[in-house]
Length: 269
Ligand SMILES: Cc1cc2nc3c(=O)[nH]c(=O)nc-3n(C[C@H](O)[C@H](O)[C@H](O)COP(=O)(O)OP(=O)(O)OC[C@H]3O[C@@H](n4cnc5c(N)ncnc54)[C@H](O)[C@@H]3O)c2cc1C
Image 1 (cartoon, rainbow, N blue to C red):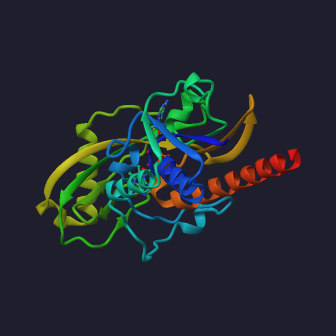
Image 2: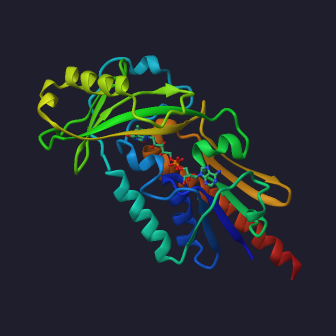
């Protein structure tokens, strides 16, 4: 009997759990995580689907300005919807900390899908994963309906359905989750330079999140100590862009695993 533990309930953990449980309703799928929506990294993020540089694409090719049509989600909505879909197919969610892949809480599961984001740094451990601190502000500005990203300064303006996100810092190896007044000035002044009318907007809130940075996303499987692991972490500032495609890749790896199990069972008959 296959029992799957998905570690992490951010956008990556939830989407992997949904894809697997919807395709294999008879398989036990349990999400184990410290934090659930609305307290994950993605909940506070900008929600912008933004072009992602794959493999060896040179950033130099993208130096000039670009305009494109894309989509923006209000992240808590999509996280709540993913959670609802998972519960609808009888998925189980447990709030708990995982110290390592050898944690006794995992002993009943033969497949473990690791989507712990920054938590993978200590739990795996994988010291290639680093925090990239992002401080943003939200303002009330329903008249803004264009996104602007200034890749030189790091400032950006992303309208969501309920408010508008102004960003943001990209501070590597910085774990500070408190609001820093200097960063607030950087965000507000930098965005006002991009769009002066912002000075008339009402501030709503400031927020800090730690992006799970890594030189490259780790999306691969490994077999260790009699268990099958699929890793899916290190999405940096692009998790809301990449989650569905990455979850499809995880599902494909899981499909192969299930086919091998099926063949082994047949050959026993
Ligand atoms: C300011 C900011 C703006 C952003 N804007 C965008 C954007 O516009 N577009 C975009 O595509 N991306 C954006 N991102 C990036 C995006 O938010 C992240 O890439 C994405 O949220 C990562 O999702 P995740 O599921 O991998 O990790 P997380 O959301 O961090 O989830 C990790 C999960 O693992 C759990 N966990 C960790 N360690 C343990 C442990 N030891 N035991 C148990 N559970 C554990 C946590 O509790 C959590 O449930 C932004 C990020 C920030 C900070």
